[in-house]
Length: 185
Image (tube, rainbow, N blue to C red; front, side, top):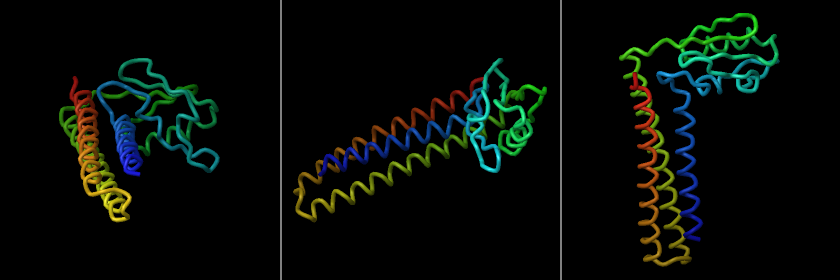
């Protein structure tokens, strides 16, 4: 019972890391990446659809993206969705593909993006602390139901703290890596 609680907590904490990595992949760095536009929602036949499902996204040059829609009739909707997104990039349409030219990041913009990364990292840390709190509560319930002794609960709590610390370090490493990418000129 205790082992299942610890495994569940660890799995949920690792989910927080995966969520953070996915979230950070959408933050712009100095280089172009298809992850910037992957999750943009495009209105397609009345339903919001991820851009990734409507077009191929390639990186022909380090500072540009090329989006080739599978269906040329979706070109206008894709352009609208990109303009409505928070990327701040104006798409250029040549009739067959949409090009996004990414201007170099200014120092101020880089610092703003680092702040965004730090906020997202802190949100992930809060998420793992919430998982730890829930797991601690579950361990106390297991003890109260006489399914484990106090010593077993305390050793499980120590193990849970080790898991939390390890996942916290991984979250910090993900955040540091993204900050380094952003500040790289």
